[in-house]
Image 1 (cartoon, rainbow over the protein chains, first blue to last red):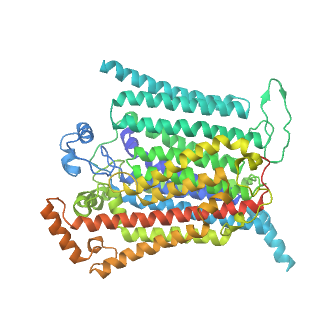
Image 2: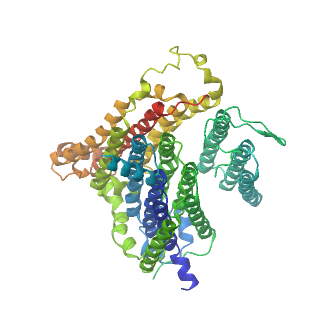
Length: 147
Length: 121
Length: 369
């Protein structure tokens, strides 16, 4: 667990902490809306893990630029010799585009499912008059006993 | 000359960041909703202006500076409007400014969630 | 492990700072007592994560997270909390907190233990970055002619994936519309509103002058920005998803400032739903068009009829324009895919907003101002 190992691996534990934070919010909050927020945090932090795995050191965003242009040269100056030739495409090093494409859609899908979950919460409130999970269970049990 | 512009740009950007931090401190320390809105929005807009000015000086006369200018215009349009909307909403829901040591009782306290000094969290 | 370990420079420190901010925000959400606080902190979380994503060389994703997380997500959450008003978040019992903490700690520990084997941050030779990712970077220019490799992957290489995502988004929109209604209640007669179309007819007009003027200046600009982002998805950061959400944000801004009834006259709920459905249909039709012209489903190389392609090729050669006819099918196909996604996402976001906002009108009496 040397310092340089920590420096090169710090994102993964932090993102897992975020994920667990979201899960904790889902477990401990009775309020349905706050639970949805916890779920949203969980989803986005899983997305961040993907993006962090796709980052390439010394790289740029996966939008093709010319190695001879100003931006390409500024990037190339900071790399050790031979790095761009080995890991780059035509002299420029890019980050991995595949996780970006997957996560982009995942984020929009995440907000859509958040909307569905919140719509369910709203209907529950209208039907039961409460949005706390404990309260809803109690009302359900009462209704069950009354039948 | 180029050196001076470079240093000026960097200093302005740093000043803008410090102003934004000051605004954050103000938003935490001020006693009342309206003063907090004033602190947050004013310093936010001013800090962004200084930062963009600094970054524009650093970037020189190029496309980046034009984009920064357009972004600045957008911020000048939206940030004060957002603060206005916030203050409007606060006024509309019954909060009144805290003046001196006396507090004016809100005319209507229709929202049960609102505590006295607007301190929600 | 080969590659560069991130040097301890400003970028890395900024990354530390942003991740710390994210963790602190999540902790604050967990400890918050009111739902409104949690929602606003969620917006802060999205904003901070946008900056962190930019640091991770992902401008497309950062753009999406900014518009979706700090924009639409917050609006939808606020709509939901306004519809479920009067609820305080009850503090969870001690046993529940202890059990939740234990479970998350154990699970987190297991995940961190598993994550030790993951490659270092920025490792260019990791299995993820060295094989398929590298292949897409090398081949995207050749195969599709697009500069933005993410758009090429989204719209061309993994187009079938994106079709599935668009369908999920549409299904979610339909789900919300079925549960919360189509928002038509908002267009029914409101006795408080004067039928006269004049600005001084509304008693609350004095309060909202600034908002109305600013909105009138901003809404056309935002819509223009949405179309810009859509059409420049191939050459820069952007694409259909971001553009759709930005267009929906323009409509939501109009509704927030001018009232839901006026917005529903401009953008009818039925039209929004129809657009969402049309997007998915057009996307599938695109795939079928490729089959008709002799290729596989969603193979953009076969989008244009072969006779047209050969004529285009000869015309291009005679005119001396470089870049063969091969690229045109891809360009057209990618633009069509992005446009289909654009109208689906925009239609769905508007439908979702109408669902929440339309229900609000009946559920909660409007405040005085």
